[in-house]
Amino acid sequence: MPEDLHSRIALKLEAVGPSVSIGLEIKIESYFDIVRGLIEDFASKNGMSCIYVTSSVPSATLNSALQSLEVNTEGLRFIDCVSHTMMGAIHRVDNTVYVENPSMLENIMLKVEYFLRLAGDKKTVVVFDSANSFAIHNDPKILSEFFTIILNSLKAREAYPVVLMIPDQLKVEVKEMLGMVCDVIMPVEQEHQP
Image (cartoon, rainbow, N blue to C red; front, side, top):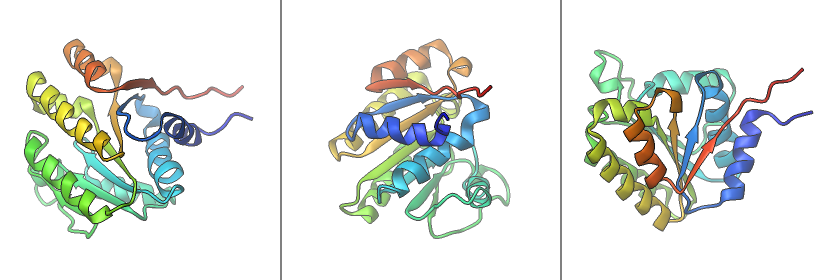
């Protein structure tokens, strides 16, 4: 019997180890399996904290979906870059900080630093969801600089930086940039069962 996709994600991250930036090429239909693999099967089961930088889905929506899927979200913190721009969409919760929009890259770096300090000595998984959304809001050269700085900073701290991307919806120049700033580009395939 093949392993679940979320379990395979955790195994892949364990095999790669810390201090390696990973670009995960995903498909929309496997989004929640991948998120579950990152948050529950990898971070939570290994006693790590998880910082989830969302520029595509509001944190309240994602948090509700994870709760309905009964995903263990202990140690999960959100940096929400989309709710602020949506009128009335901000639901203040302890595990979430808000950034005005995905083009406020310096603020995102400061919020990541804040949550890393809260985590202390705990190993941390940092997920950027998604490169596609960041690319819509930022010039490719500025985005390249942002990912270079933040991924190198996270690797120096022995964190697990992960950038989610939907490859068939990315501009060629952004895909090439991610190939240069991520140490590993990892396609994630959903296994089809007979």
